[in-house]
Length: 186
Image (cartoon, rainbow, N blue to C red; front, side, top):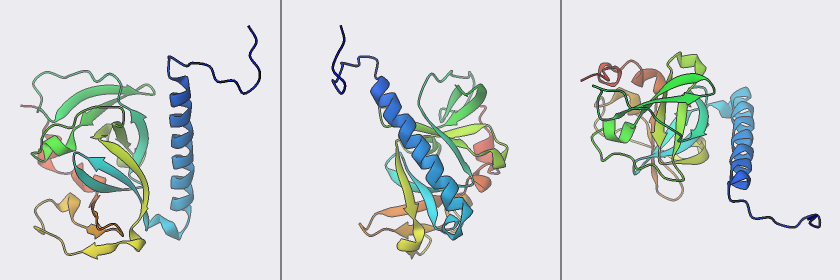
């Protein structure tokens, strides 16, 4: 049966959703590349929700953003080490940073994503995030005095946006040097 052009067809397999996700990811990559090529590289960061908190990731340290697929558990590891997943043929360890920090485990739902660490870090890992919030310009935010300075060196800078929401910069290059973060075995 031929349908007139523009007629909507039921899509039980969600290919429309996958197409929208692919378009969003393509646009995000283009914006990330444009931001890193100019002076905006210092100001634009990727905003994500990890648990119930807002975080900013440096665009040069954040890698691919993917939907949460199958994560294979690894025996005798910390409860915040979720396991391994395959992203385009590469095994990536998946970390629940909220749970690592002592908060409840991050539930996996339709908005959850894995943000892989960028190739510049040479660290095959990714963070489970509750939601990707898009690019954020810290130049438009008000820097806040560091709370508990030195408690976690990879999360020192904090900013308040126009809606009075607190954002914390996550320095992935420092977290991959944290001995506790590296000790996934029990």
